[in-house]
Image (cartoon, rainbow, N blue to C red; front, side, top):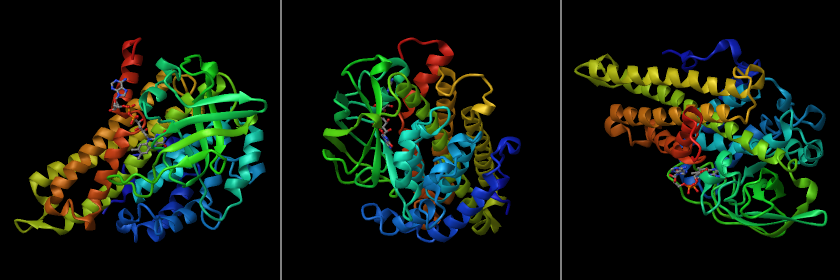
Length: 426
Ligand SMILES: Cc1cc2nc3c(=O)[nH]c(=O)nc-3n(C[C@H](O)[C@H](O)[C@H](O)COP(=O)(O)OP(=O)(O)OC[C@H]3O[C@@H](n4cnc5c(N)ncnc54)[C@H](O)[C@@H]3O)c2cc1C
């Protein structure tokens, strides 16, 4: 059997940490996830099986990955000032995604709101010092969430280029030296009581599209006035809990705002490529695992006295599947490369219309391919496709979810149209 690492990667620009990180995460996946993964679906509410695996991935008694972005001086790994932060995040997303994309999103979303205050050139040292002990001194997994989506629509909130945050209904009012936050959020990864910290996109002036009024404010989840619902029961991704969150006259210090007028909006725009690149990694990770399982299936089952893979009709399908995985993996790395500023081929900022459009476009493309490939693999497996024993149906349910989140397909298409066709109203 070929190794799944034989699928193409641009070896000349992967991160120097890539090999080491992938080795330790594969070991973690083999020991802590793969033997139990099939029982994760039933554990969606309790996380009795899932939690210990998170502790070993994220907490100090394991790999300690939750502190990766914090500066070394504060006990972290300093990934926030690396030249290959995106490429490293991509490798992490792919490796954890190969094991379980639900775990991958819960882990990477913990770093997500922190990118707004820990990545150079936008490091907020006061907040970094404030939150470092929470993440760097814990043996167990500590989660955070980025609470963007609201009942009236998440895509519009992410569409800051056109709407400038004017549909946000979560408000922040300055009262002396405190922000007072009111609002209702839906869906954030790591809600339903999982997180210790929320990054809350909100507005300081209801209905305003002035970027001065867009704010990201950090809220420890034990603050008075924060409440959360029960986890939603989803098609898959049991390791990620999602629910409603309500903020009712929630008070936090005024300096818990990420930066201030304009820069909050800018870091929010920059947060989008992080989510899209990580999504690409989750998807290619799941596809690598598909290859492993599919290889075993077509090499052991027979038709006309020959292994399945030696039949023309099957070979045509699995050859195309492998070819698509190869191309998607190259594209996923390209999205990460666009993100890493040292390699920025366009000379643009991370939040530019071009960067946003191109990275969203790659994510949309890989999502579609992934949904298609898993569908085709199900066809090859026939009755074994829906059999949990083969793990394909698990990823099949999960990759569909990845295709739909972060503004859905349409926002990806709108942003590509806006950039390539100079559309003004999308
Ligand atoms: C597993 C999971 C994890 C998630 N994690 C998070 C998280 O961490 N944080 C968070 O804030 N949210 C999270 N979400 C929510 C997700 O990002 C939103 O569901 C998504 O952004 C779409 O928002 P919406 O559901 O409000 O749909 P809406 O914005 O109401 O969109 C409804 C429909 O309209 C389409 N649409 C949107 N814009 C346009 C347009 N311009 N033209 C045409 N059609 C359009 C959409 O694609 C969609 O099909 C998560 C969702 C899931 C399923």
